[in-house]
Amino acid sequence: MKVDIKNNLERIKATLPDGVTLIAVSKYHPVEAIEAAYSAGQRHFGESKAQELRSKQQQLPHDIQWHFIGHLQSNKIKYIAPFVHLIHSIDNFKLLQEIDKQGAKANRTIPCLLQIHIAQEETKFGFTPEECLSMLQQGAWRQLHNTRIKGLMCMASNTDDTQQIAQEFKKVKELFDTIRSEFFHESNDFDILSAGMSDDYMTAIENGSTHVRIGSDIFGPR
Ligand SMILES: *Cc1c(COP(=O)(O)O)cnc(C)c1O
Image (cartoon, rainbow, N blue to C red; front, top):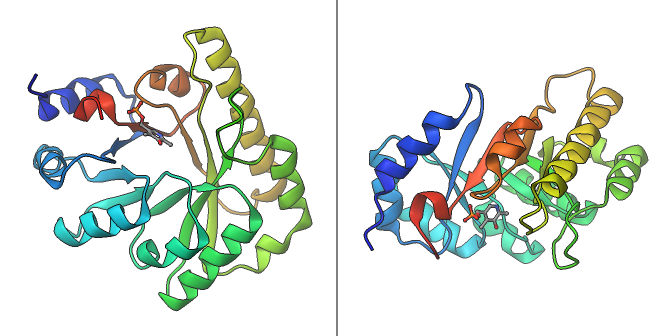
């Protein structure tokens, strides 16, 4: 089966409201697939492995905005720190500190999202809402000048129960609003909610998502 990447992108983009950013999740797909999406005008791409991301970044046009969406190990940050546009997957404070160090080495400020664990599966990563609030209350993040906390990311449960999925996205949106008013009211820095994948992005958008991460709907199965 031949996947029509350009057609898929156009079909999806036609359903997205203004102001929602589409991240094409290209993990495990070859450079040629990304080039096809790039030719169709796509500029935001998401990857989940640091070395794979770096290798693709080196081979592809430099105006691509690369999003890191996978679980990030401290010793791999260096591969992406010089160029990554947004890291979606901060799941503990230590990781944020390590990214800050690599940001300083690369002489830049790296935008980051805090990943919230909201799904039923234990296997997924992220702060619980309580852990996230407590980390922010402790305040040490305010001393980090080479990272910037830009918002939240989440993945809903892997289920057909759309009510359940909508509930989870709602909870994260409430947490997002709380955090914004408690910790970021003096700036407009906290403005990204990254929720929604191929199977649930419309539900995510209905619940306040600003960035959707879509892989298989664009590139086909992995
Ligand atoms: C793989 C992945 C996606 C894309 O999933 P699809 O179901 O293929 O759209 C989105 N977000 C994260 C964190 C992922 O790992």
